[in-house]
Image 1 (cartoon, helix red, strand yellow):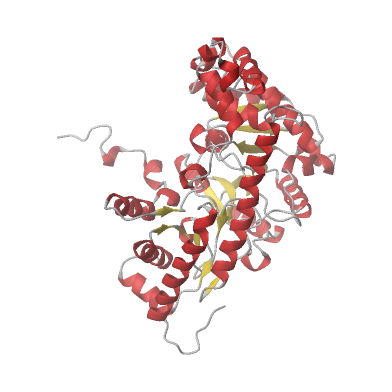
Image 2 (cartoon, rainbow, N blue to C red):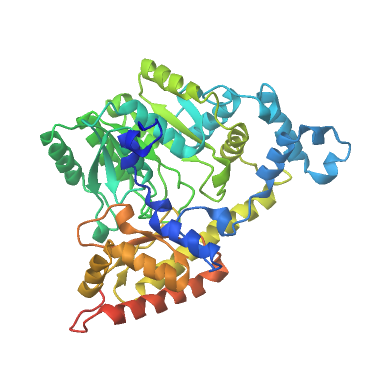
Length: 481
C-alpha cells in the first residue's frame, strides 16, 4: 500500500530535525516514574505554579470577573471582590468587542497595547508606538512568528548564545534555517566576548551562510547571568556593523537576585546610544506573563515590540499573525494587568506588593541556597544565579563515568541526569540539551521548588553526587575543580 500523508516517511523533514530537551528523554522518563508512584520533583521547566507558587490575588480577581461578567451585575459583588478589581474588570471588558469569548485584533486589543506602550515609556524613558507592539500567546509564539519571517532557507543563519534555550534551536530547525552558535564564557560568569561573535559570523560566511539576526537572552536561560550596559552597547554596535536584527529575549526582567547588575533593556541602551545606532539597528524585544513573580505560564500571555523595522515588514508580520486570528484574550488582560500594575493608594495595592515581594525575596534566597549547595558538592562548580529562574552547574565527570555512559549509548550528562532522576526523583535537563563546549558537562535545574523543600532537595542531590563520584573516580589525585 502506498504511504499516506501523515506516515512518518512523508513528514516534513524539518519537523523530524526538531529537538526540545526541556521536554525530552529525561522528562519522559520522569513522567513514567511518576505514573509508577515515585515522587518526582520537576525542575526541568520554569513552571512556577506547578511547583507550588501561589497566583497573585488581584489579577486573578480581575480576570475572574471578566470571564464571568454576570457577577458584575450581582448586588453582592462588592462583598466578594474589592472595588479596584471591579473597576479594572469593567475597564478591560469595555476594551473588548464582545467580552473574553470574542476574537480581538490579530495584534491584540488596542487598549492593552497602549498599556504596554505606556509601560515601556516608564521603563526606558523613550516613547513606544502601540502599532509596533503585538500581543502573543506567550513569548515563544512571538519568537516563532519573527523567526519564521526572517528565515528563508538553510543559507540564513541566526546567531544564538550557547548554552541556549532550546526554543531557538527547535524553531530554527523547524523553519529550515541554520543556527550559528556563539559561546558564553563560563569562567567570566557566562559573559559574552564580541570577538567570538565576529569569529562566528566569519565562519558562517565561509560556509555560505548569511547571518541575519542575533539572539540574546537577558537575564540568561539557562545560565542566569545579567548583561551589563557596556556589554549591551557592544552587542548593539556589532549588530549595526553587521546589519543584524537583534532579538532581545527579556522575559526574566523581573527576576533579578543581586543589586550589582540590575536589568537594563536593549531598547533603552539602543536609544541612549543615539544616532546612527538608535535610528538604524533593528530590534525586536520579547516579554511574557509566564515569568517574574507572576509565573502565569498556563495563561500564555506575551508581547513583542519592534524598533526600526520597516513598515512593509510590519505589514507582513501582521499578515502572519492574522492566520491565527487572535491571541488568547484572557492572557491579553493578564498582560495589561502586569504592565499597568496597582498604584499606592489602591485598595488592593498593599496585598499585591506583599505577595509579589514575597515571591521575589524567596527566589533570591533560593538562588543562594542552590548555588551554595552545588558548590559544596564534589566535582561540581556553579556560577551564582544573578537572574532568571535556573542554576546551570558544571559537573566534572570522571573518565570512568564518561566510559560507562558511552557503553550505555548515552551522552555523559544525560547518563548522569538519568541516574540522578532514578535515585532522587529530581528531574533536570542535561547541559547537552542547551549546547556546551566539547568535553564539558552541565545540568540545568530551576530554582523554583518551595523554599522549605530546598535544603532537603540539595541534601539529596549532594548524597547522590558524592556516591556517583565515589563509584566512578579512580582516586588518583582527581579532585574537585
